[in-house]
Image 1 (cartoon, rainbow, N blue to C red):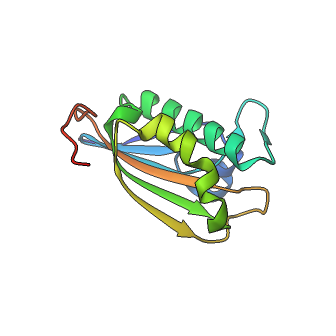
Image 2: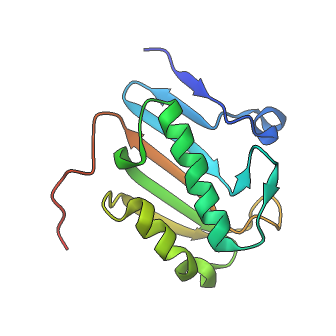
Amino acid sequence: MPRELISSGSKFEGEIGYSRAVVVDDFVFVSGTTGYDYATGEISEDIVQQTEQTMINIDKALKDAGSSVSEVVRVRYILPDRSQFPLVWPVLRKWFGNVRPAATMVQSSLMVDEMKIEIEVTAKKGSSNDVPTSA
């Protein structure tokens, strides 16, 4: 099956040469995504608001690829300041609380200082969050 490229319309995709998401077979690989509102080009100064917008952007990319947040199997969080990570846990729990993907948090500088979080996910089409979890 040929790969399918998904674009969000972000100016960075064209400037850097990447896709918001790539679909290969039943997998959807979503690029590192930040909290820009692609309709306005703006980004909040607040990490919690950035995280919510980031998840909205990821949700759209997954839907455009024929998948959903409930099919996310892997997530990577990248933050310049790891001490801010607990601030966004409620947002992440809202989106991933029932999904419970494998996850990693990394502290690293991001492309520009206004970015406070970047999130990358992998989803498997046909999977769901309706799997038993062990606490």
